[in-house]
Length: 179
Image (cartoon, rainbow, N blue to C red; front, top):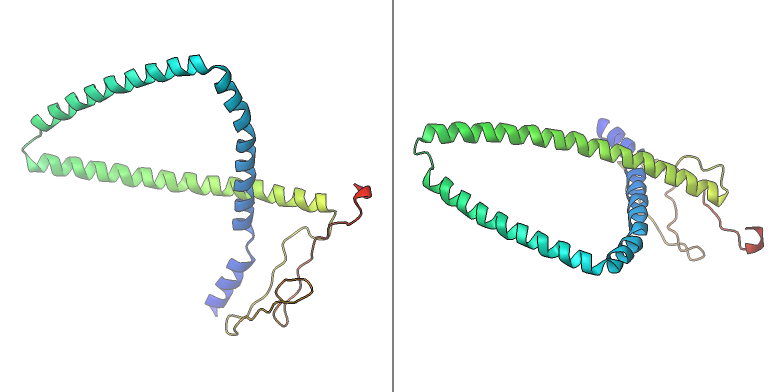
């Protein structure tokens, strides 16, 4: 049953969770920089206003130039359909190449975030003092049998399906004096 094997492989791969944890860590890191940047902008309010005025003027100049260029291009459009078709094909091939480059870069970023997330998860496990949970728990599920979950009143967590291993839990110490 190759479909069952694929499902088990997909469910047991922690890489997406690591990538998510890495993305969260990166977002947290970037958000910590925001207050300093806001304070710097507030301190240099007059300089910021002057920069904004200069950028606005530059944008207006570019707009006028772009309008002139569009008008020129429209008036000088080639009437030869073969030339237009060749240009369109070249452009399409360029875009396919760019799309492939972006896909490769997206995979690289995904892998970097997964590595970062794995480090965050391992750091979190070491902070919790749980040295036995070095890898995420994997629950084996048979694709032919339906999975049922029920709420357990004492913990509020769903019960594991029959025959599945229980994942190790990280317990927080109620005694704060140990910290």
